[in-house]
Image (cartoon, rainbow, N blue to C red; front, side):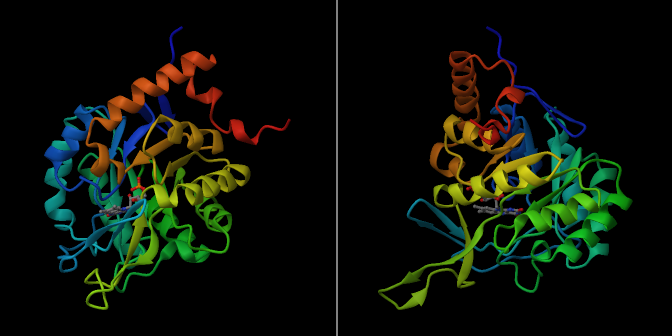
Amino acid sequence: MNVDLTVNLSSLKMRNPLMLASGVLGNTGAILRRVAEAGAGAVVTKSIGVKPKKGYLNPTIVEVDCGFINAMGLPNPGVSEFIEELKIAKKSGVPVIASVFGSTEKEYAEVAYRMEEAGADAIELNLSCPHAGGLIQFSQDPKRTFDVVRAVKSAVKIPVFAKLTAEVTSIVEIGKAAERAGVDGVTAINTLRGMVIDIEVARPILSNKFGGLSGRAIKPIAIRCVYELYRELSIPIIGVGGILDFRDVVEFMMAGASAVQIGSAIAIKDLNIFREITVDLKRFMEEKGYKCLKDIIGLAHEEG
Ligand SMILES: Cc1cc2nc3c(=O)[nH]c(=O)nc-3n(C[C@H](O)[C@H](O)[C@H](O)COP(=O)(O)O)c2cc1C
C-alpha cells in the first residue's frame, strides 16, 4: 500500500508533516538548509525582531528531568541582516516559515512584511515567549492577540500562524481571538515558565533566573491544548512540545494537529530524527491501514 504523508497547511505544500520548531537551529540559512536536507517537511526560523538583540548572558540553557529550560532572551541579528539568511534557507526547496516577534503590533507587522518581501512562505507570530524581558506575552490577552494578528494580516499576503502559550486560563479563548482576526492556523505550544536552583551555591542556574521548559515534560500539556483547540476552531493546528518519535506525532495528529514541530529532541537524537520519524510513521500507517494523514487527524475526537 502506498501511504501519502503530504500535508497542505493553508497554502503551504509539505512533503511530510514534520517541521523544525522555532529557535532550535534556525538562526542561519545554512543550518536551515541542513535541516531541510535531513528530511524536514518545512523549517521555522529563530524568532526575529526589528533590531538586533544580544540575548542573555550564559548560562542560557540547562537540562532537567525530561527536558530543558532555556532563557536565551531572543538573541537575533534583526530583520535587515536576517533576510540574507532567509534567502539562503529558501534554496532548500521546502517551505520556510519566518518566526517574528515585536513589542508592538506595528513592529510585528513591519518584520512580517520584510520577511514576506525576502521570500518567506509563511509567518509564525511568536506571541508567547515566556522569558523575553519586557516583552508582553501577547497570547495571554485575547484583545492583544486579535490586534497583532489583524495588523500582520493586513501587512502580508502569505499565511500567518499564531504561536500560543498554554499559560492561560483558556487557550481556546485566545485561539478564537486569533481566528476572528483572520489567522490561518495556530501553533501550540511554546515553552512553559520554569526555574532551576543550584543547591550547592543556593542560586538560580540561569542568568535570567526563569526560563522556558521544553521537551518530554510538556508533551501531555501540549496534547491537551491541541485537543481543546481542535474542538473549537476551524483552522489548522500545528502541534509542538516534547515530540521524540513517531508515536508522539500520531498522538498529536489524533488530538487534531495537521502538522507538528520538533525542537528539543534534536539535541537528544540529532537531525536524523526527521528521517527516522518519517520511515516509522509510514510503517505505522501501512500496518493500520491509514492511507493519508487526514485519516488520523482528529481521530481521538470520534465517539464510541
Ligand atoms: C533553545 C530553545 C530556543 C527556543 N527559541 C524559540 C524562539 O526563538 N521562538 C519561539 O517561538 N519558540 C522558541 N522555542 C520554543 C520551541 O519552538 C518549542 O515551542 C518548544 O521548545 C516546545 O517544543 P519541544 O519540546 O519539541 O522543544 C525555543 C526552544 C528552545 C529549546
